[in-house]
Image (cartoon, rainbow, N blue to C red):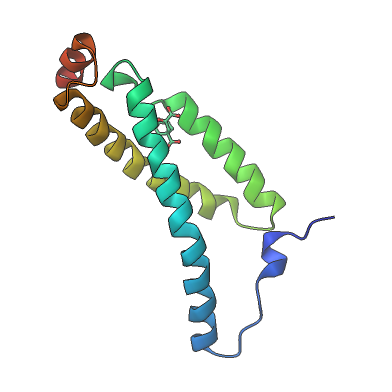
Length: 119
Ligand SMILES: O=C(O)C(=O)C[C@]1(C(=O)O)C=C[C@@H](O)C=C1
């Protein structure tokens, strides 16, 4: 059986130790977030219209899924939900910028460009 994430947290005797562990976690998290961000570019490439960048049903499905995963890992579902909602807003804004960039570079078809201006 695999250990829960919460059970892998080390007991720390000082703030120096706490921060060393937090920095080590961030060194794992940031590359993953950058890689996840790359999929916003892929989404912008694959979505036909800018109006489809924000997908409420998908957002709610992700929130439901990550809350369950947080619970299983011994974490706080409300904290994970707040992180994910904030993170997805940032990614949605990025995906819009990527969609606009692709349009400006002539890499989206004309209907996508026209509708991206309207939305
Ligand atoms: O799944 C998509 O449609 C995406 O563009 C990705 C993503 C996400 O961050 O996971 C971003 C924007 C959408 O509102 C939903 C989800």
